[in-house]
Image (cartoon, rainbow, N blue to C red; front, top):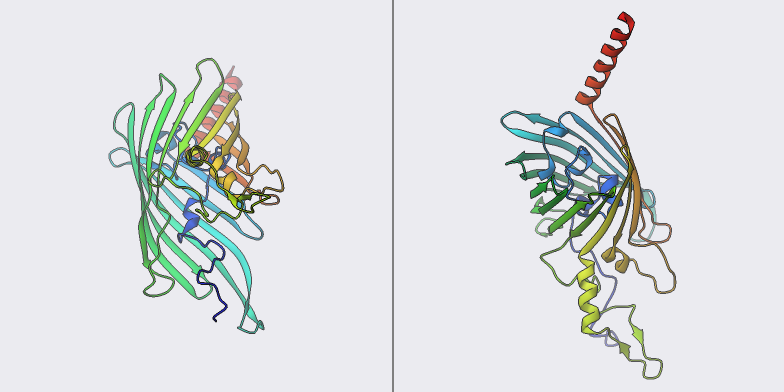
Length: 353
């Protein structure tokens, strides 16, 4: 015991529980950086993250997401939107994360069977247009988490507001995310935080170019985004004195600033096709490997929209071999029914002619 150091350091642990609440449930959102998006269109996959975008254009929209996550883990979601004349527009969703099957052992390493781990959330979201430019929204999440014999139940609320100017083709959204706490803890008496965040997003489409750019700021309540703090294991050392070479104050300032910023580009070459590309500086810094160049922090994807049916795909780079694939499928039931009815009318009119 006398030989042990006074200060011991190990791996940096997690800061929050229910981190799955920040997982992307939209291929489009994942392709554009994984943070808040401010876009007012018919895509129902964005309204689960930004409830202020919910309006009548999403009425009877059904959306399903599947993600091939790390290793044997996978997650997905399903949502349905419905609008009412007086109450506003609502969206109902279910989200799950399956972390796979694990081997259960005792203290000596002898196998005693298997167990599973998973997270689940049921969400009710509401949005309403205040006028031609402003809209508000909120949602309530019922959260359940089970890891072997440890279980937790919690509640969280998101509140959002958006400004949309269709003449200037721009949109601005502010989101206060995951306001809440666990009601039943994994370990009785041990309280833990959930991943609270404040995000701001801006987007604008060029007038004479089929391009829309996205800027998103996240973790606005916290300036220092460095995960390891001052105990950075990637610091360079002077070859002669073997003393650490710390970055300058200016370098630290700009590094922290760009860690809060996500940049995305959306290209629309034709009406039914959209292409996405983005860069997340904070993700790249956290996944940085000095000995190897990777695409960590970059994301890309596409979406095909044909007659109210959408299919989206995206790919996000975290590290070598860690590139989740996101799949989205959505359909607007009412619009599809109208299209089929119109086609029948056209066929009948042609037959009569």
